[in-house]
Length: 293
View 1 (cartoon, helix red, strand yellow):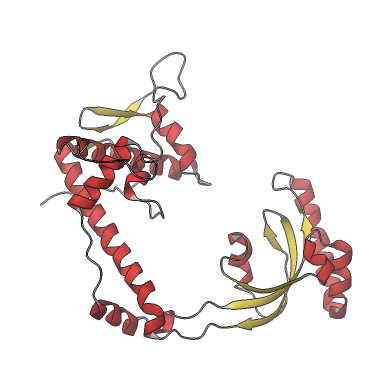
View 2 (cartoon, helix red, strand yellow; view 1 turned 90 degrees about the vertical axis):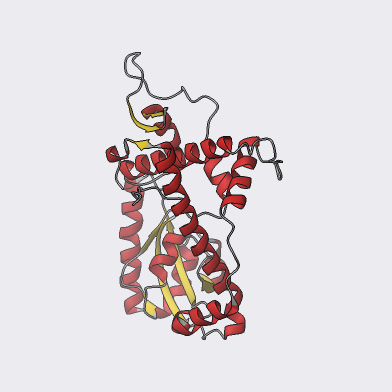
């Protein structure tokens, strides 16, 4: 039995070829050095070494609050790229691959490799119908909220300003609890958002309309004045949810195209994972034990 290795292709809107090549750099030798010594190397694909300098350089494309997770993601991305590069070279795909939409020769070769070796059939109508019947409660039009807010602006790196903004927001929340009719007045006096001219009105908001950190908190709120400020990259917000409208259930005809796209993505990701496992056995990947699975 083949051994499954912990390689992951990041789910992305980009093609596999572009994702595999996107973070390759011409100056592979650049990176941190220790007093002139070559960077340590724990990771190999066949006889190709992937050293810590390459991983450090790749990390800028895998930002994470935890540097260890960023390092692990960078290492896996470099392994995936090298596996696909070696296989396209073995099959002599380079000669037949024609670049499109500004692709490099390597991106084109990897794209042709994926298309040829892993064709993904479109899901059948029966499969889509079955998924719909099993997940009908989750297939709905998006929820939306009617919201007012007061933005107390503070730069992300200014700790003192953000603390002052939060304190000010808590004071305004206290005033609004006693006098909710003053929201428009306070928004016009204190908000740093252009919506202050409309008394802080943001209107109806659906997911994707604003920044993610605002929506994550916003869609957890109950109707009425939020008891705490909502913090975003822009500062602290005093928020009032005036109305919540839950999305109506989708009919199958409305959901079918989305279901088909979802199922096709799942099949493609599984096929890619299995293919990477096959390639790892063919070429040999050593050193992943130094990285979290």
